[in-house]
Image (cartoon, rainbow, N blue to C red; front, side, top):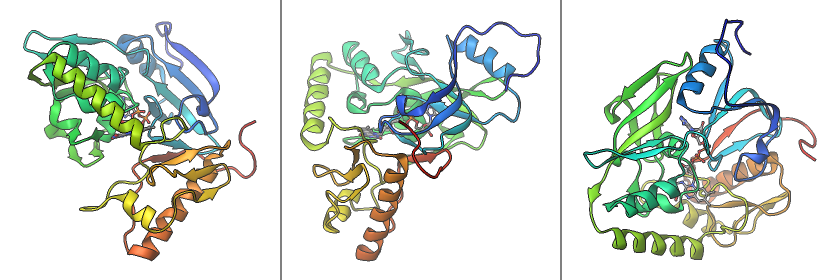
Length: 305
Ligand SMILES: Cc1cc2nc3c(=O)[nH]c(=O)nc-3n(C[C@H](O)[C@H](O)[C@H](O)COP(=O)(O)OP(=O)(O)OC[C@H]3O[C@@H](n4cnc5c(N)ncnc54)[C@H](O)[C@@H]3O)c2cc1C
């Protein structure tokens, strides 16, 4: 995996055969061949310069929107959460955030500094990198309308400054043809009342706790909402709440959540996604599109102990 270069020693953490169930919010998934947590941006650049050109790279935030199959991932996962997690308020009121910062921290930081409009991030259990990749959003707020620019990195360790105009951005979708990943972002937010922003965060978190099954492993909403409708409404109307495959079921509390409530395999969840999609299509003529990203290899038989 590492090219034979006369290279600078790595300062991050490299693990082999790392179980992805430790790094995904569904708590499922087989092993990844190599798992790297860079010490910082310079170490990430150094790491990428040493990686073979054909090594598959899988970028990971908090794993709150991916289903890793039971056969795991070939190649290297690069995990930024908890390591590239610096945040600064620039003199022009712009917040510069590294991709490993959690969305919750970003929301609190903005509120504390009297910047409003980032409250919706508070309950999204992912990183800024994941939010940029997914155009994450909630309660009327969305990631990309707040972005002034981002910094990306390519597989050779080259860094690039990009603006929103460089991407095709839509609802829960960001198309980036250049094989580049996010390392930081500059968010532009309006000045406002710090206390009101903190109160709004509390209220949004309460609202979430009342409507979402937060005590069980999940990936949040599994399907994108179809235009002018809600995936949860269609799934519920098909009578699928509580529908189960193996250790996974459609949440009784929120029909667009699939919960791992009984030691599920990734294959249980994937089958459940397919069954829900097929049933809704037969009943309503709408083909639901998964929001969750499914990656990795299928295996026959048990994947984890
Ligand atoms: C309980 C719960 C509630 C949720 N509520 C919401 C919600 O309200 N709104 C919403 O939008 N989502 C929600 N989600 C889904 C999820 O939290 C978001 O999609 C989040 O943005 C994913 O961030 P992450 O860091 O966990 O990304 P991951 O799951 O680690 O990765 C998701 C995708 O982004 C890519 N990626 C990650 N980091 C980078 C990077 N630095 N550069 C390039 N690509 C990268 C990954 O390769 C992968 O394809 C919820 C999930 C849960 C479990």
